[in-house]
Image (tube, rainbow, N blue to C red):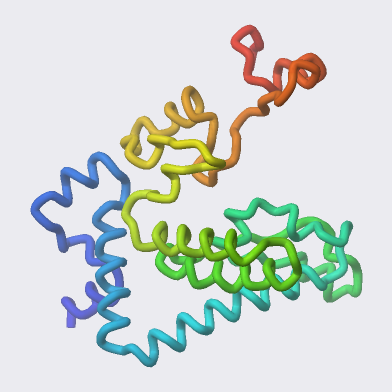
Length: 220
């Protein structure tokens, strides 16, 4: 019974020969490998239940996007102003208190991170709605969903090798020095968003405040 209780979720006592070595380089390596193994075992042993869960999460992603888009807000498309990474990998819930009161939901949302393995299915639903409403095209949506599925089953962020048509070494940077790499080299956080503003033109460089450009001569 004690063994079954441990195996119900991630068993931190179960380790491979190289688990400690990889865990010291990449945080939660062993956890990611076990989660991957358990979910594939679920798909193999219980294919019908697995299909039902996957379908439900995909439909949830579609309906979530639909309801957030239709609910009255400050702007018609305020839901689509949310970071794409968040919309695809998080459960995004509008301001329910305001909606119950009959008021506009505003531009504030509750964001709940989803289990890594199931994020690909959720993003498939969200991107299906994006395609249906013309916010994305089929080709880009399929590419993004594929990337999210790969990211969901990989212990390291494989999609992070390619961000905004730029190659990045970020996924293979050891976790302990990852923040230093993000701030000092890549200027991107784990969601792919830029940490500091960067001017696109010389004219814009003159108008943006140096404090927002992370200049060396500015006191943080």
